[in-house]
Image (cartoon, rainbow, N blue to C red; front, side, top):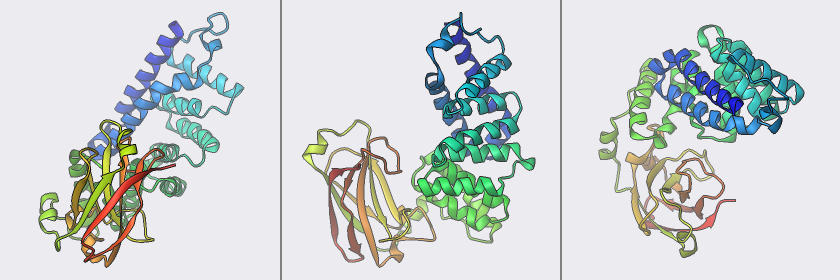
Length: 337
């Protein structure tokens, strides 16, 4: 149990030290700072169970580390014995950051990435660490490629999209940064959206573009009566509806990018639900619902509350709709494989 206690304490210390090291990020990039610490906290709780072995707890076989350096040495020995432990490399990276060695942390994450080259969380984490280890904390070409690959795997991966926008702004591409960030407004909570809107408007200002309209004003300025959607849930799925699930009602370009031209997020309860999608629900000011002659309307119950589609979500078959479509009726009766 000494070993367990030390490892947990060491990991908590590593997270706290990393929060201190990244304090400039908290001041200038609050969304990124929150994402880093939340991600690390969740990963820390799981890592010991991912790489721990009964032998590691046997004091007769392994001496309990007395310092973080000792713990790193033992972890490196374990990874030398079995280098195919992704979470082991990730833990080593965090410990190296806590020791003030971001280059070694970057190298550890690159080893992890070789084992899971298509994992969007790991791609975003590795790209961020490359920037932390670089002079001026600049995202390099390889890091940007990782972020784009992460978004290829999960188009609304929040950390990857946020970091790609930072990289674009670093590269003096503020208009591209604003376009990268704008879709996030549809999926983050209100407080985060306010902070994000400030960053988007700063980027738009650098690009000579007008700021986004205030959130309240954008809904009031909706063009036209909007698109009415009625969503029902099949009785079979209603019996399986998790508590605190979220309902997303979405309009998007047929055959176009996955980002919505309008979206509303509601509590998944009290079906049937009627909503009206309009320009106030458009997450991207450059692509409004009123500009579309034809859209595809769909509804999804997210069992996790996540805007990104996941296996196990409840879905309705998407339906095409024009400007004069009347009320679109959707029945959620499928489970996403």
